[in-house]
Length: 205
Image (cartoon, rainbow, N blue to C red; front, side, top):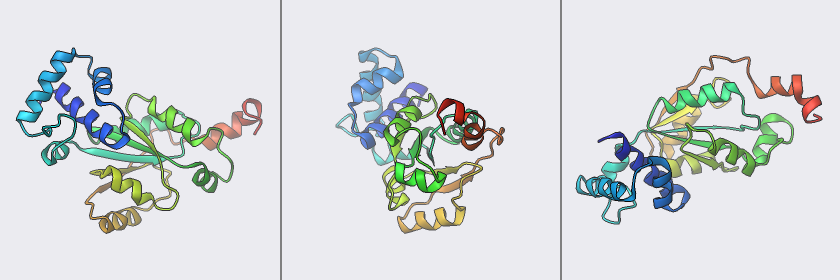
């Protein structure tokens, strides 16, 4: 399987989750002609990676992708986030990021986020290493985990979630996902530090 075919499978996986039009998304990601894309999809159907509908993955197609799931508030995007998300993407083929809801963000940060959950989703979706950004569920994080069905769940160096809690929650939804704890190469770069140093002058915090 070549790189363009892997990209097509990735886009199909993402579009199955977010419901966006497939053809536009593939054209945007692949930079190939429509004829070339159709030829690639024909080959993927022939090799049983894609169903006859030409827009959904077979079980073999889905298993050919290693999906990584990461999460956080992402209220102020800083270098620590970029390093962490690049490290998460390096663990697999597809990176899905979940941003916390506004209510969850308040519980975690003890303050209202500067950006709304929709704005934070848009910010994260604009990052080149991110294939899909979703807004999380307040009552049960494993609803989103079950939707994505990742092979790997990546936790940032400063995230409070415990590996055991994640592993046990995955077992309840019959998901055999590995948990990876990522180390930030610049742990001193954090949203709270940025707020402390610049918040008052920039945002009036």
